[in-house]
Length: 156
Image 1 (spheres, helix red, strand yellow):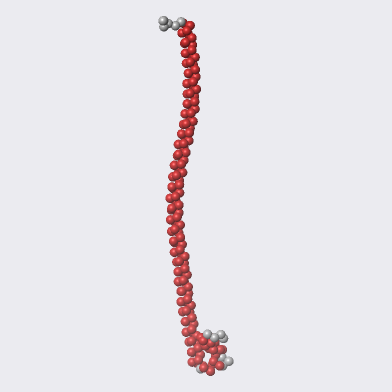
Image 2 (image 1 turned 45 degrees about the vertical axis):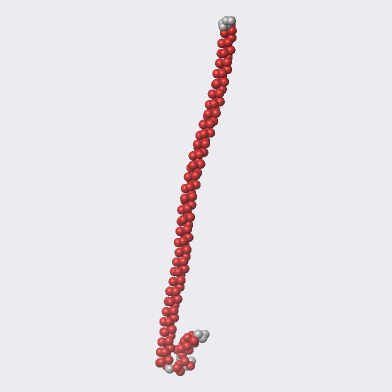
């Protein structure tokens, strides 16, 4: 048995191998094209994924920053409420103090006017005597009667 092949058979075998090689090259080219497209898609997806991860991280940081700001706002609001209540209480206190001062002023004024009225009454009675109270000719007699009525709480 000989292991030799004919030239025609060798040429046919080479032609078949060249066709197989061309077919495999086309397949490799197709696979590379697919791999490149897939790789670009994966890279694009990974790129988008990384960008989305960055966006999520940024948003989380914003949320934390806003929570901190809300805490500050709540603290300032509490202080504002505290000082507002102090101010209202202080205003009420100030108003009460002012009212008390007004009452004291009015009491002092009433006391001065009462003393003045008593002094007037005593001077008129001391000068003219009690007969002036019933004398219609003297206007001071009428004033002295009105003064006595006012001190007793009567309307004249």
